[in-house]
Length: 133
Image (cartoon, rainbow, N blue to C red; front, side, top):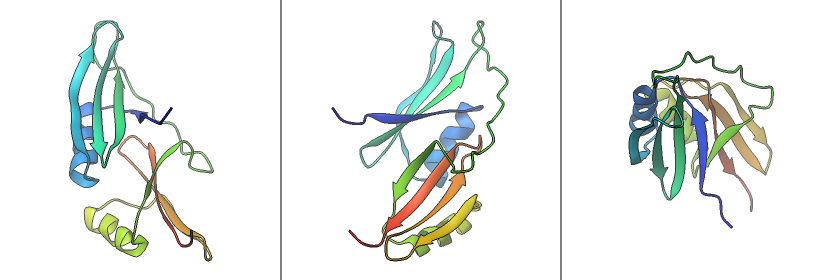
């Protein structure tokens, strides 16, 4: 058994695809598709062999439903996490892209550095660098 993908609910599929592809560097693996029987739109994005499914809930007439993002929980869960090689470079890159840091950066001396951002729908994304292995 192996992990296949992570999924986030989004309010605007096209805007979310733009965020993940243009800001974070994902590639579209499966373009936006509407499943009329399940009343949802979905797309699958890929980065270095990992997959992220974006899902937008639709009404029984397959029109977008109102979306109410959930407040970020105290421990930023659930979240999607990326391991980065250069934490400080990642902080600078996020600033260049105009993506605000939600929480952090945090440091566990000798162990790890990490921080959290949000996508446009307040889905949490972590960037971490492990300092020792």
